[in-house]
Image 1 (tube, one colour):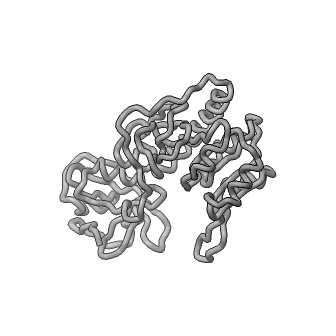
Image 2: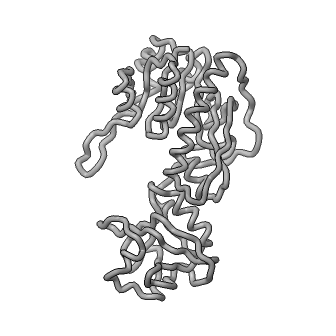
Image 3: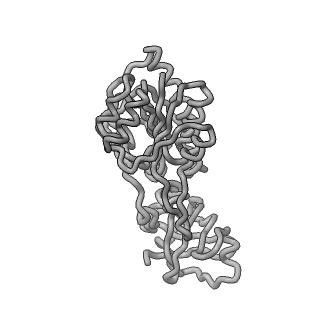
Length: 307
């Protein structure tokens, strides 16, 4: 089967590597255009582009995937299947229905749950104990295609969006290869998604804002779900602090109030206490709460707040 791979971030790399390692006929990679990053606004390539070029694979970076010129480039290759893993753009019908075997997408949730751009983050934020990866035969909807294969994965308490993403990307890569083989050998048949769909919209910076009027468990899940981006944050004395890691502690306090500030930094919530394990002051490096409290006059009774 002649394959074209559409993907952009690090999440897509294990799938790309798995296709190459399995000896699949990978003829080209499509990824998003280079973007300016950092203070110097230097153009940076996507992880998928860098890896593909290192393997001598042809790379396309169309500004407009709906353009006739890009369609003609894909048409010349005559792919049997297009594989899509975290590409970041919606494919037009002209591309979707071009390959004889269609377009196969790897999605990081147990569809129809968490359709959309941030399924890993929202699964953690919402306190799910399980998630998974699903391969689907793509249609014109947002993650609405028929299911090909699906694998369930546990979410551990120590997981954050970064660690869970890495684990799911590896499980997904293995599933993707099995899916392609199964489709080629006609032993896998698409099945409609069953159940009530839920959605996982893209995260915004403000989604990381900590609302201390929630429970300690909800705040714990938020901190894990938005790490490393956009990151959980709050304010103390009008200064912004990122909160990278926390623990739930039994006890009671006033929401947002600092209840302990010696060898441990405890903050009240509407139910339970939050122990801040790692905090990141603006302009500084991340540090433990013990390091943070040294040399700072942080008083019990002070409040973390919204501004």
